[in-house]
Image (cartoon, rainbow, N blue to C red):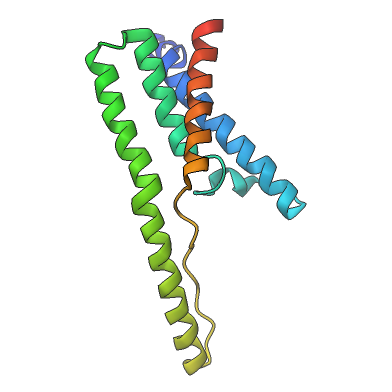
Length: 150
């Protein structure tokens, strides 16, 4: 039972989860206005504004720096992980989205030829620089908030 309290009280983990939650909630609210209907599945959507990948990983970096020190090994490791996560969100996943667009065109052509309806791939996978920047700011805010109040 003590281990559970340790996990629940882990300020670095709480900061990261808060960063994710704020970003996903903002995304769900904005999409609710766009679609004029709230859907719970909006919390699980990848891509879009703001980047929850950036928010979560930057909250982790900031919290590690605040609690373990900005000269600690864990801060350095979290920086490297955040770099790869944000790079993936910006570059790799955008390329995957472009590939999905091309494949969807092929699916349409094949479907028309065979007179069949085929499932399409999700095309919006990556993030713009603005989405990533906002996610990073949310993450930093989340870590500072937990550090300040707890």
